Image (tube, rainbow, N blue to C red; front, side, top):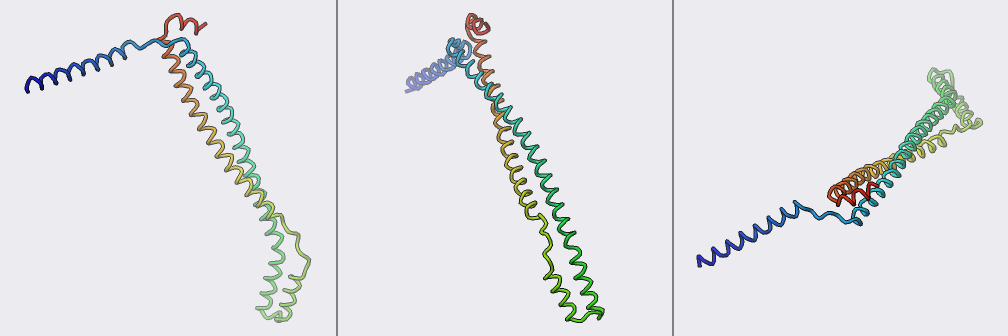
Length: 192
């Protein structure tokens, strides 16, 4: 029984040594890549670099569109605020007449009938030109929505460019490693 246990320990020890030796051999002398592997790595690195260039251009264009959308939003907000101020200024004379009539009634200078006639006259008067507040507000809301849409688009294109930059780095690293371990003749062919 002890002999069988000793035998199993010896087999296990030999198997462990064989695994460690195989791993060391695999790490010590990697198989040099074939020419077609190097070409595939080079093609992949070039494709990723081209995609990165396109993504970087798209991200830059998106940043410019975002800046333009922010400017448009600010201009629309300014027009909306101006339209509100103009609407308030246009309504001010009517409010002044109403306030003066109420104050005169309180002081006893007007009767209820006279106050009602003034109110009816103000209500029956020609309608004031409607200020373009609603239109300006709609344009402002559209500009806000567009700016938010472009901001999201910019974020997506920027993240895509960042990911492709990392991928380009990895692809170039793999190609460099393959060229370092390649047959010297393959490396010279690749350089030429």
